[in-house]
Length: 96
Image (cartoon, rainbow, N blue to C red; front, side, top):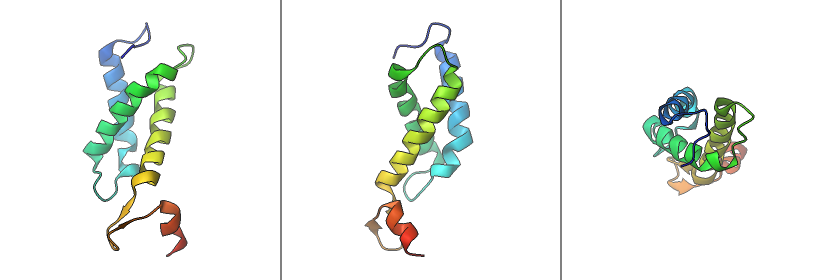
């Protein structure tokens, strides 16, 4: 993990924790609880550092990156308890 020059490892951890706690409740579903989402957020943040442009604020970049990737995760692995079947969120929205 290569951090930007002006960011320490602890700063990075603090930023990701802050973001994860703020948005994790939006992505909780079936087998994913808030602590699972926070762990996913850390993995996503570490992967996203490769694309970070150090001329922009790190917190803003990570917020957008983590939020978008968690949307993709939920869309990809959404599981519906009532039917016991995996369904895309678009399918669930089509049937009230």
